[in-house]
Length: 167
Image 1 (cartoon, rainbow, N blue to C red):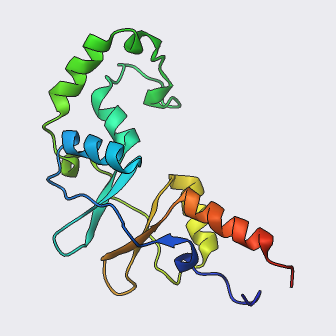
Image 2: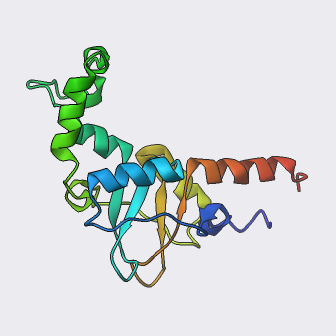
């Protein structure tokens, strides 16, 4: 690849066998999707494959765990000690069952930062570092989901670059 032209996100984009969900997917169904496909997040699309949002494991935890009252502004709600929770499986099960019927459309991240296939991969990596994996890739002319860039797909590109001779 020419060193003067930035590598596009399409080089690290996963587009085959892309797992998605719809806004009316329940939390219970999302758990099954996560388990079946060994993933931690899923793009949420409409019937025309327009990107609506992203639902991930963090949203799941934020839904089923109670948020302590009076958290300081600099603390992340997941910074609380979870030791007591995992010793009380019945309590966790009750919290989970209370939310299984909810849809991921009401829980998903809606304000997503996205890239296009031709966006320089440096921007995709910057978004991964700042917002986490995955970064949705949408069509240049629409909001249609065409793929995702994940930390694993970038690692593969980095390994490929490592094996290429320096120019």
